[in-house]
Image (cartoon, rainbow, N blue to C red; front, side):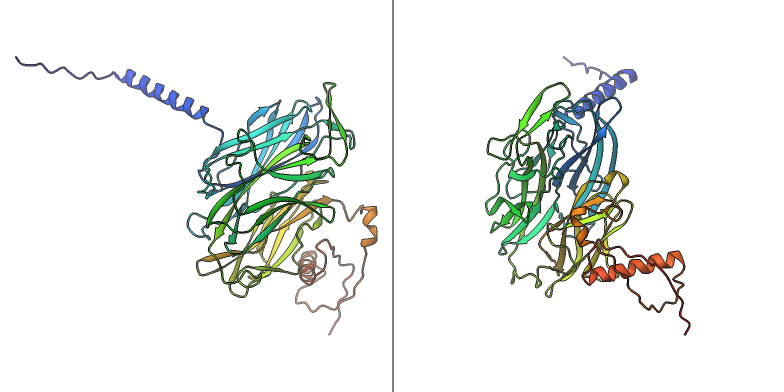
Length: 472
C-alpha cells in the first residue's frame, strides 16, 4: 500500500501577519515586565542626592534629584521611575550629561563613563516616599554578585528646627578606583549635610531594596569619622585578592537633637540623633568599584602613586562659588617613576577638566553655577592617574565641597574678618591693548590662574581698576 503524502499547510498572508503581531505583542509584554534599567550591561557604580526647591501654586512640592551612574557607555543611565512606597509624583524635567569618560585610554574592559541625570519631580504632598532602581550586570566582581539595587528615601515633612523640608546629605565618589595589593589605603569621603545634621554611612544590609551582595568584602573596613566639625565616611583597605570589588554603601542623616516633622495631613513624627534604633531623616545610595591590582615596588606617594602638590585643595575643603561666575580649581600632581596622564573627576553637571597651560602634571577644573544652584552645596571628587607602560596607578581620592552663594555682594558676617581688599600697582609689558575689554578679561584670568597656582585662595577675585599706558 502506498502512503499518500499530505500537503503542507501554508498559512494565508493574513494569518502570518496575525502571528507576527501576536509575537510582537508578546515581546512587548515581556519587555514591560523587565526591571527599569539601562541600555548597557556593565555597571561600575552610582549615587543620588535630592534637594527640595519650593512649593508650586497648588501646594505640591518641587524636588530636584541628582543621579550619577557609571557604565561602559555614556548612553546608559537610570530612569528612576519605580516608586517603591508613598506618592512619588511626576517627572517635570530631565537633564543628562557626561561628567567623565575614559574613552579608550584604559586597558581592555576597564573603560567607563560617568553621567549625571538631574530630574525635577512634582510631589503631591510632603509625606515620605521612596524610589528604587534594580537591574544588572555589575562588572565581573571578586565578591561574586552581579545585580544592583539602589534606594533613595525622601521625607519632605516640615522640620521644627528650620521650618523647611529636609535635604539629603551631599556626597559623591570616583566610580572606579585602583589600589596596589600591597599598599594599604584610606579613602575619606565627606558626608556633608546642608541642614547641619550628622551624615553617616553604613554598609547595605537589606537585600530586598538597597544592596545585592550586602556584605563588605574581606580586606575592607567602613567607619565613621568627624574631623574639624566635618563628617566623613572612611573606607579603609588593608589587603585582598587581585580583582574588582563592588561596594554598596548607604548614606543617612540624623538630627543633632530631637526634632519634629509635620505633614500636611495633620500628622507628625519625631526624629532623634543617631542610635542603632533611630530612624534616619533620609537615605541615599553610594556604590562604586575598587580594583586591587598587582603589588608594586614602592607604596610611597610621589614614586609610582601620584602625589598631590600645592595649590591642590585639601580633602574636605569648602570652596565658595558665585552664581553665573566661573569657578576655577587648580590641581597639581607628580610621580617620579610613572607618567601623569590624567585627572579623573566626579562633580556637578557642566564641570570640566583640562590640562593647565599645557602642563601634563597640572589641571584646571572649571564650573559655572546656575541661578537655581544658589544656596546649594556640590561635592567634587578627583583622583590623579599615572601609568608606566601598561600599568596604571592612582593617587589618593580628594573630595571638596563647593558652596554656591552671593559672597562678593553679601559676605557671611561670621567670616568678614577673613575678607580683604588689596590694591596692587604693577607694570606689565604687553603686545595687546589692555584697555580693550576682551584683552583685559584674558589678562586677569591668566594672572589669577598663576596666583592660585602659587598658593592664593581659589575664591580670590581680581579687578582691573585703571590702566595707564607708559610710553617707552
